[in-house]
Length: 310
Image 1 (cartoon, helix red, strand yellow):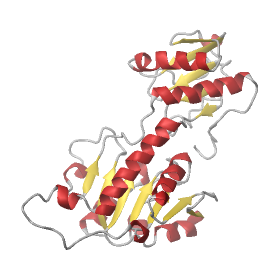
Image 2 (spheres, helix red, strand yellow):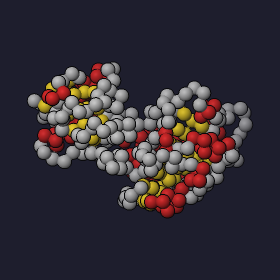
Image 3 (cartoon, helix red, strand yellow):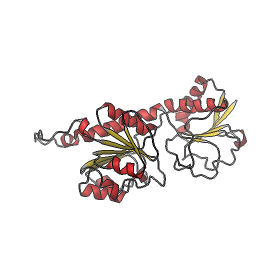
Image 4 (cartoon, helix red, strand yellow):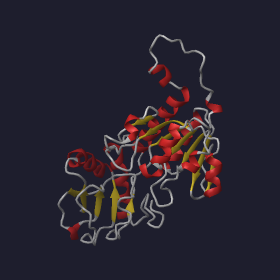
């Protein structure tokens, strides 16, 4: 019997209990899933950072901690966490992100707001977008989500440049890295999508200096992490026309305070951290597979590198 502790907000138990148990059975695993296993008996922890487990020291026999979230910035520096930490990578989360990013990219590319909000009797047929081939897109972050979003946009005809801190290779995407690569990736970009993890090195990566590199009137789309953007610099760039519109799904403080300038700014779209939601039906397959690998003594998938922070 494999003892798996579920540690997330109480209302998530009803959401995940059935799918997790079904996933364990499908994977051929004999699992006792519970919220109240004695710490010494726990083999694996299914974890959300807002759940009850914050001190991992009592779980000295746990073989791994498997996050329900893609982001791990709130737990990666927890000194009590000595077990392997696996971040969530699953097809449902990736599909959701690709669909959200593609939708908002096309919205800005086509300029559909002009017509959606312009139902005033004026026949606006003198302004039309370029084709996708003439709209350069830059994606900051070439992990699983960034690479998938980039390839989806390539298939729609956009020239896509991707940037990461370290060298990467993604088919059909121009891949750059390092400080010089960041400057090249942002210079002249008309749409910038941020999908980097939150680390000290990526905080405020879009700031007054880097925003000034974009094509004037560029669009900024952030479904990654709120601190990737210097909020004051973005608001200034929106006000002076350097950035034409920002669509933001993540923020330094969530929910976004009602008095935050983003809410009232005419060139900002706020969405409530919904770009990529973990979907139980697909996430459980990732969790079950990692437990299967762990029990077989094989390397786990998507283990976080603590030195990098993701």
